[in-house]
Length: 89
Image (cartoon, rainbow, N blue to C red; front, side, top):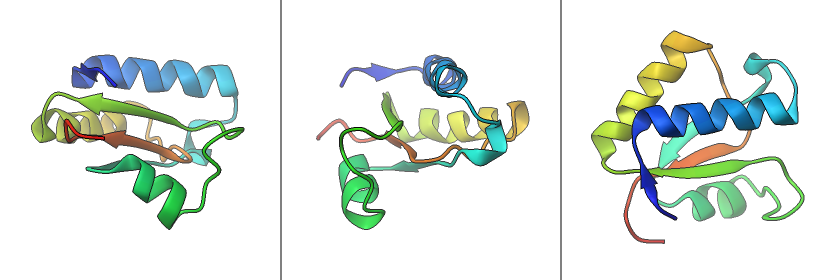
């Protein structure tokens, strides 16, 4: 997964939400250093056949900036969306 700027992550996630449908408050988002563990193992979301999206920021500061954009922008609590902030899978 290639790292992206906070703005690019924000735009890609909004595009995904708009494509999948549903109102923004029905979605959940979060940041984590290991999105597979958080999403698949801890939350038991199927790795396939579920409308989640994962994106990586360049740095943890970018990830925190992304959270600020989400809160100020759409008030999203995106469903099963996690962003990996470490450079390792």
